[in-house]
Length: 190
Image: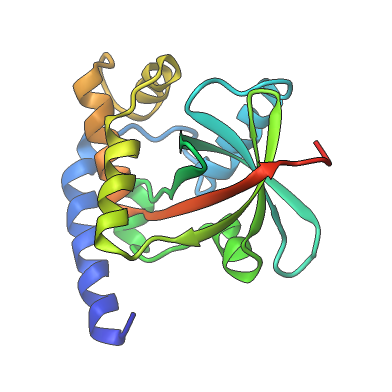
């Protein structure tokens, strides 16, 4: 993106976050909420992930070591859609902030995804094609699993509902960075 496009995108993200922020609750009152929550989820779901979620393994762009993150991942045949999230508190302060796992993907798009007890190799890339963005948005925003009700309870004030979950997913998609991971097959290293 160019300078003007970056400024316009940042302004749009910040505006959406300002509108969304009163509905959200701060999870851990820490600037690293997402990292801490991902770590907790990795431990809690060490053996198997629930539907609609996966463990994403990237290679650290500086360290070269494997890095794991718990992500919401929606699979459609040989494609998996993932979004790098920007919670409202972060999006207001730093609307173009990027997670370390996305930097890792940009440096080395070869990733592994563990769904349930099966691990797959794949190549990740950011989505820019409008038609593919539409497919990704539909997959991410319109898919609701049982675990999403708990996720909604953690992130939003009040009781979860399907509409609130879909609205939350739309916010994340519209302010985050959508990616597609094209699966190459089951990983023999799993």
